[in-house]
Image 1 (tube, rainbow, N blue to C red):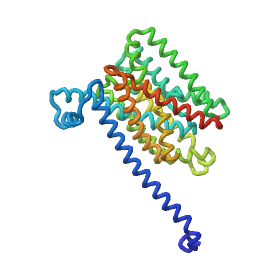
Image 2 (image 1 turned 45 degrees about the vertical axis):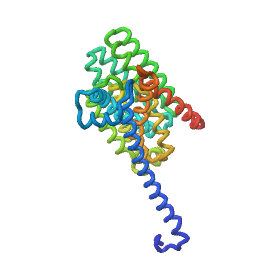
Image 3 (image 1 turned 135 degrees about the horizontal axis):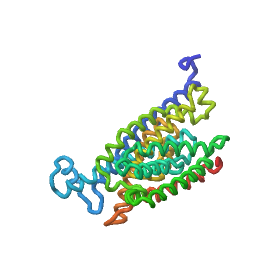
Image 4 (image 1 turned 180 degrees about the vertical axis):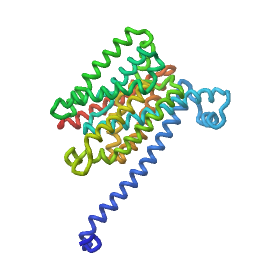
Length: 350
């Protein structure tokens, strides 16, 4: 019997369910527009707020008709920083969501699982061997990010399959070893130390438009790959057996997803240094709004990640005037409560 032939009492739940699903989709789409508005507000604050504030009207004038005025000079210096914050925030938040999806681990984060440290170690080694110019390339960070992710997954699996606790412990061990390696190289090489001491905390300050141009294709490519995996990540959340029964190649999905996450993280680390907790905090906040559907989760993360990074950068400029606090230090303060909440929420599965 078709749905149209069914009695009203049988059709009602189906019709109500379809209407409820459509209403939820409309609300989530409206929420995306709200997230875009938050990004615009964060960009405006990033350009206007600093050691000396610039009125919004002067900022608009400097954007549409730049001249030699103080406002134009300030806007020209803050604009690349703002664009870079958008790219880095989107890259880290989406990388965290993808890692949590492919590992089915609520504690999945590029920083906690050693990917940030691997990229940083790779950059430092390339800088020591080939100079600071070579170390700024994204390709200098990619090998370390991939190797660290593979090592953490292999150690965390331990032949019995990965669990959240084993992966986090393996990430802590790999991170500790890589940090020791980085410190040994940087302390023994004054040239590396000079570039490492500011870069290691994670900062948007002092980056020019060249840094944005270098990572732009990698971030865009990584985001497109991640978005293309959204349906596969939904299937993977059902478990490997259920995903395979739906025609999904779980191993290939994890490999592609891991590569996309490592690429996004490596691009971010090469440009601004390691920034922790963005990949952990943003997906957890977004998941409370959208649920676990990656078709909504990933676009929301790509929009709200920049809001967190730019907002943290603005807070760092305000609370330490006339100097500023590195954005990596601010996100650490913001992200620590989310780590505690994630551990408490998932303690039954740990």
